[in-house]
Length: 316
Ligand SMILES: Nc1ncnc2c1ncn2[C@@H]1O[C@H](COP(=O)(O)OP(=O)(O)OP(=O)(O)O)[C@@H](O)[C@H]1O
Ligand SMILES: [Mg+2]
Image (cartoon, rainbow, N blue to C red; front, side, top):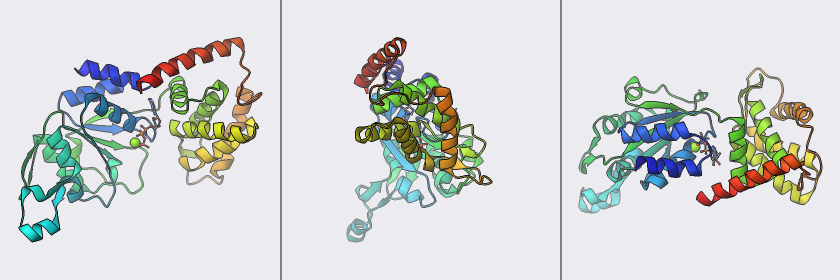
């Protein structure tokens, strides 16, 4: 059963074999998970696919300071209670209660932004598989109820220190950036765009932002996807590959990178610098953007990729 789910999820995702196995194994063993990774490293995509293929409910919640225990657990409908006193059926279940009763995944993004009194509510359900709600009753968790918290390791703005007690009850799975080839596959899969030069340049540009000294947190594959999508649309209006690429790069990347506080330069300047150096390396975007004029070898590679992509698309 688990192997069957693994195989189905694997077909719908580029790479990530070990991470899929680790998540499924934790769920199978009744453990709860902390996914630690920067933005855009497939955390949500992976979990949604796992829930879908395993045919279990998926509840998603964003951790922020406005989150309260009641938003997590649920609350009694005040109008009904006023009219007819407390009845269990007047309880409006929150995502934690639903995930427990239905054997689903409760996914909490930006977990480290949520107040400690809210994360403490999770401890007993995680540890005992049970939770008592006054006037509603005992909620028992159905397998494979799993709490999955996500946090960005570089996120230090507005975050709270997560309690030791919580950390002691959760297993860590790290989500690093994927390698260059996999990122190209992801961009191709998500955009459906065929020009390998453009895909290659977009992925290279984005990856360079992650190692630039003026940048604290570089862009994710999400930025490369946006860049290629915008580039493709700009090309429909004017066939100016270099100019379009630069415009698309500014639109897609500028607000997705976090600069170091000390740098005097702005994001656009840094993106232009990286693109200038890459242009030399990749020899620019030659020819018509819509028909890249591939070499025979490039064409063969592109055909192979196209076939691969079609295969992948059918399983999504
Ligand atoms: N391995 C992958 N296979 C297929 N698509 C991927 C993969 N990694 C990322 N993507 C795509 O990249 C985008 C970002 O991924 P996703 O939203 O899952 O990241 P995330 O880790 O949840 O990010 P955040 O922390 O910002 O919420 C999505 O469009 C997703 O489809
Ligand atoms: Mg996400």
